[in-house]
Amino acid sequence: MTPDLLEQGAQRVQQRAAATASGGREAGFGRPATPGEVDLAHGRILYLEDVSVSFDGFQAINGLSLDIAPGELRCIIGPNGAGKTTMMDIITGKTRPDAGTVFFGSTIDLLRHTEAQIAQLGIGRKFQKPTVFEQLTVFENLELALGTGKGVRASMFFRLDSVQADRVAEVLRTIHLAGSERRLAGTLSHGQKQWLEIGMLLMQEPRLLLLDEPVAGMTDEETARTAELFLSLKGRHSLVVVEHDMPFVRSICETVTVLCDGRVLAQGTLDQVQNDERVIEVYLGR
Ligand SMILES: Nc1ncnc2c1ncn2[C@@H]1O[C@H](COP(=O)(O)OP(=O)(O)OP(=O)(O)O)[C@@H](O)[C@H]1O
Image (cartoon, rainbow, N blue to C red; front, side, top):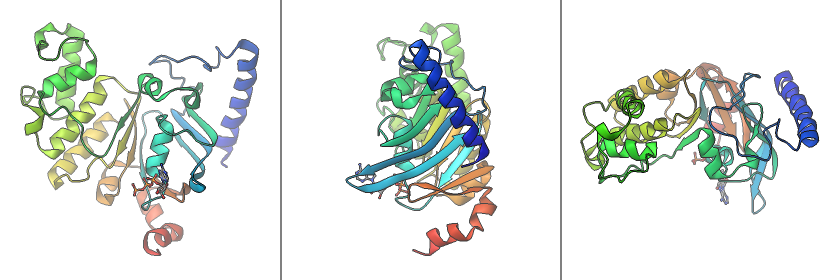
């Protein structure tokens, strides 16, 4: 364990003591926190310590510790079955670990929140396959993600308030779909559908985005534009990207984490981890 992790663990013990004395309110326990309340005082937006989960006796995650800084763009790589998807499932509340700690900022214990609450807290997840509404326009998909509560077909751009309209326009530019807002989503290319789905997540202004193999199936040009997109999101959002495409990883990431057998095997620049004997062994030696 790094000194950093030790220090944070000690801080959480203190917070737990405060939570006991106060009914948990100060520490953010026992109540759904609201978006925007993420406490970044300790320089971590996401923090996992010693997380484990097994399925029918198989240890899919095995003492996994990881922390992500606010605004960071982190890539997670690892061989098939390393536990990457299970890790995302744990962060988003889909899978409950048997042991360990998972915090959003310093005070929000994600293990005390439901999957729906975690999404509302500002953690957006994108699965590998695009899941946009193909029969709706690009604009309608984004509007739906805004959750205006209006009927989809009845909703028109000018009915949004100016802040919402500005937000849609900004997201359209960010995802390279400005000028395509009236197109049916079903007519978009695979890459454009992926960008639209990312845009739908951005409408919720997430603090943290979890992206599972975002460039799988994309053309080289779409992959390059996705790299630009992610680099433009970094800073304002934190991104955790699971990806097998190494040239893409190289184009976006400063720090790469290698998972294997449900834990962190190595971490560093892509060059550092690619030259690590243990990493070479798990990628080539099996
Ligand atoms: N619900 C489950 N029940 C049983 N085993 C599971 C379950 N979910 C995951 N596993 C197992 O846990 C291990 C980790 O799976 P996971 O999907 O997290 O790996 P991954 O790193 O995402 O792999 P890939 O790169 O192939 O997507 C695998 O051996 C998988 O078969």
